Image 1 (cartoon, rainbow, N blue to C red):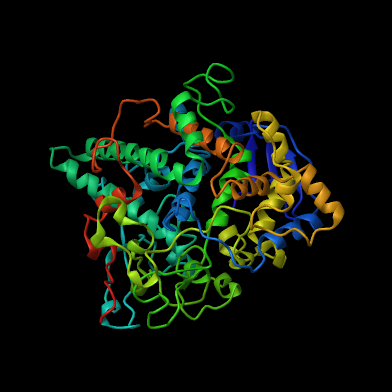
Image 2: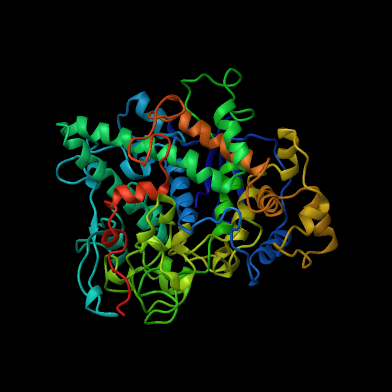
Length: 555
């Protein structure tokens, strides 16, 4: 998780070793190269630690939590959202310090853009990033799983192409050998986002195979494949992902009529200027996905409620079976076990942990009833409702998820809600009421903030703390409460902010459906449809044995 933000017009906002916020002026090199954030609204008041602790405790209480209802959102979209966040915030400029880089590359590298740089890096011709690519310099590398005897011979074989590529070798620690060979290692923080990243690798490679049939080869083939992949990706986000999390009327307004508040054309920027990212988006509104996370998932034929272990895959296990946060060691049972970089003797994903994508997405949307999730658990995992509650496991984050391996920290700092509230306070983020005023919308009432609709119960806060919460609601909590009282969809504050940033990030990408309004998808069922299930169907050739390589339970 980022602890340093270069905010245009303010300087570098950092959190020091003592957990205190400081602001310093950037060096000339930093100003040229650092990933650029901006501040959309005014500065807000800070929240004292006692209140942050009490509010975080209320948000992570171990209580029943409602699922998404209208619309019902398949659970894979939670982690697609995380994958997209990493694409937006991928900073390709850090490794360029001291290197010769042309201005165009530099500008693009420090800008939030929806261009899959978390998958492509700087491309196969870059001397550092060519390690992500196959020998042909066009396809991306894939990895092979490790055979394991549990529960049967069906998992005791290697599966090529079903893990991320990894460093391997014999040098360094066990953790070093497990690190993924992908441009953004954050996409190996949990197993769902890792398998999502793998799906995008396979999508690119399948597009390469199709375009190669037209006679393209070499760099021309790579560029054509990347352009087709990125345009379809953006179309899927605009038409499938965003309307599932934001009031669709807001999404339609932004993409039809343009932005009203963030980097509005003709006011504060020229069209050829690279985008910035509002800290209100990065630190608050786009952290809505934390509330969608489940404590456990029906994962595949092995890790399911009616499987050989009689339990689904826990959130902790989904951290365990990664190279960045975990160690692939099935005996790991506590967060501290994952902090041990020497633990375990498995260096790629065990074969019994390959995802069954039928359990994460609803392929019946594409008319593929043959790929419906097993009926044993009501048709597939769904996200939790977007609201002010987070599942209890998010109070026990492994240190690898926030760069804490090998450092000292307080136990409360494993609590994701506390981390989010603390970072926002340190950055003096605008309150929900301040952004509502900026957008000219009616703010939430005191009752909506304090009571909500089946979300966090804030009775544990003192009377003074509740009064403070009503007057100056932390933006992240406000966005979640707004969605909660709005039926689970982000509304006029959180939804508007998020949709406008997505629109700007697409507009500012080198490959852009916003700047090419007449482009239409060619890899879906028709010229106006390309959903995440269509992307997966294309990537995995529409085959059940690729979308679910472990197969179904033996009767």
